[in-house]
Length: 579
Image (cartoon, rainbow, N blue to C red; front, side, top):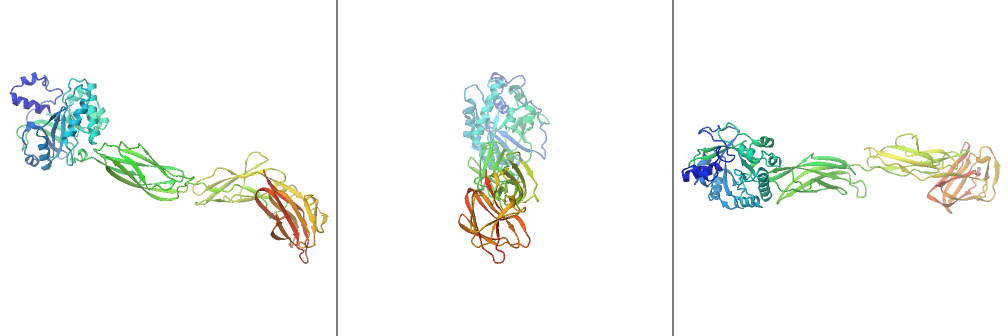
């Protein structure tokens, strides 16, 4: 550094006046130079630090085996200066120091000026010469001169140099400076430490501990400390700069750039149709290249996004979104692999995605239909609504609501939470509509699912729309719908009713004197119905048939003529017409 240059020039010319004439010495020493110290005032080594030296061609030939044997663990070696100078001893020092077991690195002596692109040229010059590899530490920018630049311009120059080296070799260099220089000529800025250039090599001689500029270098403190400009080390003739590493493991400052990926947490559970996120730590070791992330093992219907993409920092988030529509992500456990690719280096990390039921139940709209059950009232008819549902997790509950004549929806009480049908006495000629909401056992709920509106209609046996064949008798009775009914006892007698609707029910009396009848729907035999019962039941819905939608249909009832109790009644027909 400047101490070496100063000592070399003083040795060569034997006068310090010459240094002043060169403009390198001020009353207080070099521009921003460390304070001078009394000989022999170096602070003692400790068990929590490592010792090293920094050298250039001014040290001449060095016996690196002796240096290593003296306990030195690392060496900062001058490689370049300005835009063109290459230290003539760099290649030899670099190779021999590494061979002797020292960790080494190259430093560049900065010669800032206002020439456009000067910082980039000087940075590229170091990269071309340094040839750093395994066993080396991150390179250094030796900042001791201003080149006449003001603080703002010098900060810009330093930023350009650092960023160019970072872009070229993928690691962030360290900065060599003194407390006085940084405070006086760099405005004591902490912006470089905040930008990731956290490795500080501070030059401060003759003190028990160094003063750290830039608010303790942004809270990071010093990494290397040049605590003497004239130490004595076996293998080196004359004075040599002494340095100390703040720690006992040089791994954090080794050039060997790389990164690892780690996932937190290792497993996530997500419902179908939902998203979950994993934190991907990009653990960088002097590695500044962007890391492109990809994911493998996603189940069907799932997709992943990254923030940021690609990861340029030390943390990324991968969000996995599953599907509960179209291509539904199957329930199950899936091992996922995150792969990072950066500067030809591939790293992976793994995690598990557990997909659980996130699909709402599949529920059938609750449409009304007629069943062969119940008794016709004077103004009402029993109508059944049904809403079967399916879900792999099972159904927890249903909610049912009913609307009458287009009014507001009102809740219908169910016998149990999992009831799937209900029969109610509905007023003839009124319009009804039902809707249901189903929830499965893991909390997935449907929206309200409404069936079609429908109207119960009643046709009395006396209607001209019913065609009777054979002998039928009319009888008045208060137990019959409308106060009367027709009956036949002769085999082959029939009643045919053509109607429009989505469901039909035949209403008749049951009793001990009643027999059986054959039922034909739209000309096709469907069933034989027995009305025989030990006790009498009037206005029973004895047969019913439902259709998918409204249509024109016929129901034909043919008397069988059962021996001993042949009678068949036609009391009324009830049908449902969808709205």
